[in-house]
Amino acid sequence: MLLVNEVEALRGYVKGWRQSDEKVAFVPTMGNLHAGHLDLVEAARQHADRTVVSIFVNPMQFGEGEDFDAYPRTLEEDRAKLQEVGVDLLFAPAAKTIYPSGTGQQTRVEVPDISDILCGATRPGHFVGVATIVCKLFNMVQPDIAVFGEKDYQQLMVIRHMVNDLAIPIEILGKATVREPDGLAMSSRNGYLDAGERKQAPALYRLLRETAAAINSGAKDYAGLERQALKDLEAAGFRPDYFVIRTADNLQAPREKGETLVILAAAYLGTTRLIDNLIAA
Image 1 (cartoon, rainbow, N blue to C red):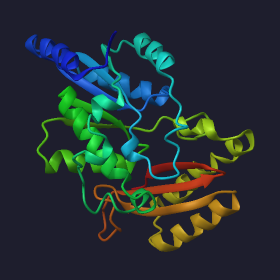
Image 2 (cartoon, rainbow, N blue to C red; image 1 turned 45 degrees about the vertical axis):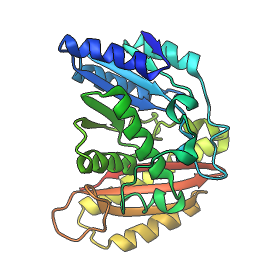
Image 3 (cartoon, helix red, strand yellow; image 1 turned 90 degrees about the vertical axis):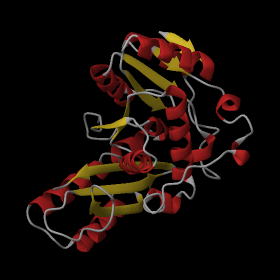
Image 4 (cartoon, rainbow, N blue to C red; image 1 turned 180 degrees about the vertical axis):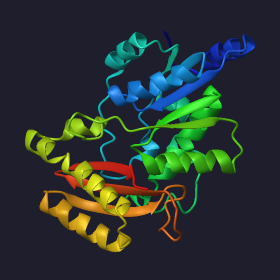
């Protein structure tokens, strides 16, 4: 596996693959890799001849008081995992490579409306940071396909809208959430949970499943389902941010019969913010 830190070298390898008519897949990450990330890599390898993974902890998507400085950085361990699963190239740039003039002078990419709701409402600027870094990485790697996890469902929708609006010639593949045996969605931030919180955490997924079951059984009082779930989250020891039922394609409130719905939730256990979602119908 190649380890590359600079854009010129990255583009040189990708150019060589393209000259050999090889298809390139890309998985952007912030490192601290777990089985969920490796599942994305496996999907990328199934859809392309060459696989590129990036590791970059992006300061632009962290707000004031968030865990940028504490975010786990485990490059050597991550490198070994990626080597084992057959990744062709690991792109691990320094901050000065990504933001040579600093984040304050960085041109920004904004996807309106969908970036300002749910996680965007409580994390102002977060999805501007996400869209900017993903767009920049797309231009650096220039892959044919990029793979993202559906656990970060709103992020996936922001990226799909960005790619469509800017006519970026990259296929976006969403991959189903990988879960622990008790249902907790795999996340790098799960490591922040103490033993007691870790036992409580699966209740978030349980409430998503219960709400989905109610919808699939014919329940139409979505606002009532949302209110009950918020109460149940509090009773389970969470501090809820949101628990909502939205249309799966644009995250708006349901309006018509037959729409595919997604249930999305975010809640704190102690200082750890957990997110999850489930397609309902």
